[in-house]
Length: 465
Image (cartoon, rainbow, N blue to C red):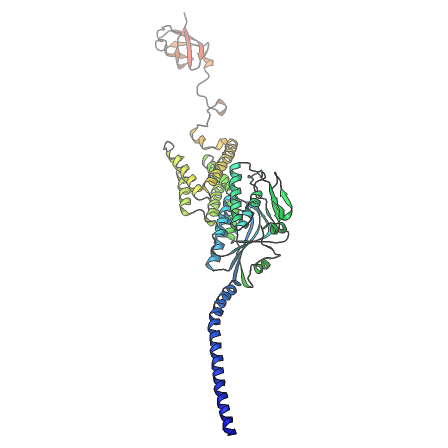
């Protein structure tokens, strides 16, 4: 009985254990069923975060002067980064500024980028460089760097005081700043010296006549920098990436040359116009013509590599030059010359970065070239093309040419009329037949005469009574 009771107790215990185990298993399954979807969701979110922590980073330099060549290079570099699906683009900025049109184009391209952008100011982001930095999603500055000083200046470095231009550029700076949550008033203070701006974060007030320029520490305090980092790698690490590969994008040799050529485009136009015109009107040198052709070739090469000039602009230009040359030899009442000038202007304007800027540069170049041409023509005036239409030889007595004999030698000599003088006729004087004229009297043939005057081509005679 004791054994039977024990067996029953054992069986009862086993049955209870099975029920407890089954209940525990069901509880575990229930917990897992609830936890797995949550874990999966968290895993997906974690995977996205992990994905943002690795990938490729494209580092693009923004250095020297901001101009059309730089805009073309940045567009090419950003396109490469987008096609490679990079995790981040770092714009390494150190520039004193430059052309506003180019800066605006660069800013638009950065804001339209399909991947995150970070501006790393390692030196100065001044003027147009400040606008480019503000166009990026985030800004990280190196110790000792600065951002701001975006006041408008002309080609000679003098401040532009046009309210319209200052207002336009101020609005662009403000828009770029406020797009990424930065203080628009400070951005305007970088442009407009007439504005008063309170910057309580750094205990500083911008007074009238001043332009805002911020150090890295000041920019961080007022929100114009998101962090201060000593290197590009530190900036990338701050952005949240922890496992990345860096891809350095630098301008090609052709892009560097194109950037330099577009910067001296006005000088190239001066040399081109002056050289071609001088060769046409003072031929025989060769050097001005060669210099003009090379200058125009470099102009179009720079614009073509920068992505502004196409074959149509080159065709227009060459056709214009051909028509101008034809005008020198084919009478067209100026029609060929007008068409040629139109072709040259159209080729240069179409092939330039900006139409208005191209017309301005062309006007300046034409004015300077005209002065150079005038000086050159004056110095070499004896070799000009106009000398082809002028008889340069002089038949002088010093050169042995005697158009008419020395008639004064006939004065006082006597002779006989060979024909009646009415009042002109012929006479024999000193054994020679000559044409003579009386002073209006009729003298019959065979009469004795004496030469009394030799006036120009006339030999005047009188009858001897």
